[in-house]
Structure formats: structure tokens, C-alpha cells
Length: 387
Image 1 (cartoon, rainbow, N blue to C red):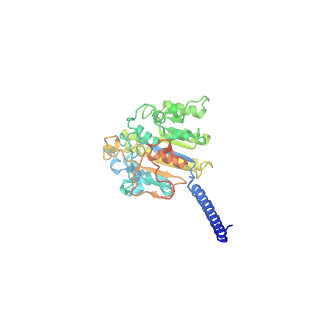
Image 2: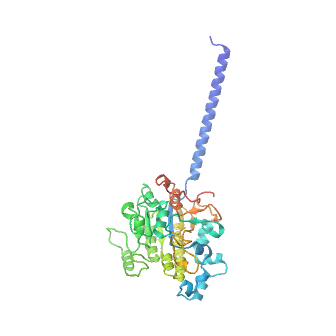
Image 3: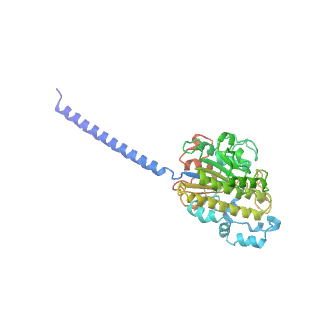
């Protein structure tokens, strides 16, 4: 016969067990609700990403505008009237000079997004590849790491997986990733035969079975009959026309855009045309942004990452070149604008950043972890959420 004490104890235990179960259930529901809330809050608003590269644009011009010591024939090789050039791009205040050179970058991107790389403010950005030239730089930013086997602007297809190719494998992004640029070597950098990306690079239209439209035929004729700064390349204006056409007709979700004239004119020792090309590139970026923001599938859902592939030397001579042995070639800058990037403007001080961080940043903005596929890739840049 069970004693009343035992009965009371069992009942109390049952009540306590029920209370604990209820508490655990309540805690579980609360935790699940918090997880769902956190996950929802953390989900990127970005549905489209555009990586734009202004080839060889120095951080010095980006953050202080035209260099007064180079606006002359002796050191800057200018052909344009010095007075005219100074009227267009010069001011005593370097903050005003940079706005004259890059109005979209400073009036829109830097006020609505973030920009890194002003070394005068302690924001240090560098490449990790040893060559400090274009092919290794584009490879580093798109694969997430430097490959020591990739030499200076070589011709072979890149053996490494790149984030654009990887994203193109996502069912929702398949056929929605594209590469546009003035340099013919983008076909090797992004390994067209393996990646199967849509690529319009240099003076060649992408292969197609369709009959070219009159507009495409005209562009192809211009490609073939306009003198190139480098064999196989085209001027940046010839990149812009088919790029805008493609955006409006194909509605890509991930884009790479490479404007190359700034580097070509620097190598040619024409500082006047470096300034002209940089200013035009800024205008091209504005035009692309405005075009996409006017389309419902892009408006307030698109992030632009704007950067350069390498730095250059400094002084009256070395501004023309870059490379492993030329100090300053390692220094870069990066600007980001989009719905997931708080408007913190010009960043000061640490943390330092690397070119290799761009690949994982592109994926993270689209809710993907590129490092799960490429463990060697650097982590994303700190541009998402409250920083």
C-alpha cells in the first residue's frame, strides 16, 4: 500500500516535471522565434552585385584628385592645354579636386555607402599577389587568394575557381552572371572554356548562332576599325554600349565590368588622358547605376563594388608604371554602395583590408559562403550591417 507521502511526492514531482517541460517548451519557442527573427534580419537585401574595376587608378587620385605636379608637358606628358586641364580638374582643396575628377564616387557612393583606402587617414588596402600587375590582381579579387603560379599578365586560362563561375552554378543564378571589359585577357582570367560565363572582352563579340542586329554589326565594325591602345582591346566607351544593352535585355544578377583606359594612358605617359579616362569611367559607373536603379528588378536591391586591380608608383616618373619592384603598386582602394552597406562614408584607420576579400564579399552579399568551396579565400570585407 502506497503511503500518502509517496503519493504527494509523486504528484509534486509530476507537477515539477510538467512545469519544467512547459518552461523548456516556452524557451524552445522563444529561441526558435529569436532564431527566425535573427535569420530574417541577417538575410541580405542585395539580389544583384556588380564588381567594377578602374584599371590602375591610384589611391592618391581617388582621395585627392588630380596631381598638380603632373599637369604639365614635362612630367605629365600632356597634350591638352594646361590651363584648360587645370580649369576642369584643379582646385586648391584636394577634397574639391577629387569631386571634380570623380563626382559620382564622392557625391553618391561615398555619401550613401563606404570607401576604404585613404592611407592619409590610416585606411590601408593592399594586394596579396607578389606581381602587383593586372592578371594576378584580377585573379586574386575573383578567386579570393593569390596564386604564386600566375605570372605577369600571362596568356593561359586561369586554373583557379572564381566566384563568378561558382555563383553561376547556383540554380537561381545560372545564366545570369556576365563579364564585360575592354581587356581581351578577361577571357583567360575567367577561363571561358571551363566557366561557360557570358563574356564580352576586348574587340570580340561573344559567339552566337543568331544573326547580329544592326547595332551589334556596327559595334563589331567599330571594334575592328578603331585603333586599339593594346592589340585585341577596345576603348571603354565600346564596353559601355553593349553593357547597357545587355543589362536592359538579359537582366543579369551578377556582373563584372572592367574599364582599362586609365592604365593604358598611364603607361603611355599621358596624364591628361589618365584624368579624362578616369572622369569618363566615373560617368560610366553613374550611367550604369542610374540605368539599373530605374529598373524594378534592380532598384534598391543592387550592390556596386568599385575598386582597382593594382596601384602604381609615385613621384614625377614612377606614376606611369607598376610592378613587383615598384613601391606603391601594392596599394588599392575599394568603394561599396548598396542596401546592405551602412552609409559610413570615408573609412578611417584599421582594420586593413586585402584585395583577396572581394570574392567572398560578392558571395556574402548574395547570401552564399564562397569559402565553403574555396577554403583559401580571404573573408568578406566588413561592409554588411552595422560596422
